[in-house]
Image (cartoon, rainbow, N blue to C red; front, side):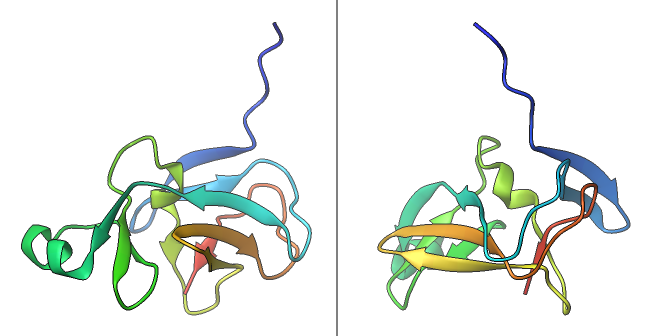
Length: 107
């Protein structure tokens, strides 16, 4: 069985770790799903923590498991990607063409 080459890599940034693409990504392309345990806002208030992605007024995703590579996507005031909800799932899509080696960021 051939091992598939990775498309992304986690690298050190000025603020910690970041999510970088190894290949160019076209505009309006699905990049990765933000995965983790689905929590209610009420459960989140008790738990707290980092890596929380809001789905809607009632639910959010606890993206803290290391299997959630998307948790390394950092915030930027000039993002190149955006989170979109589909039911209780959150997908990260490119907002513009992203160059190979560029960090993927969301607002």
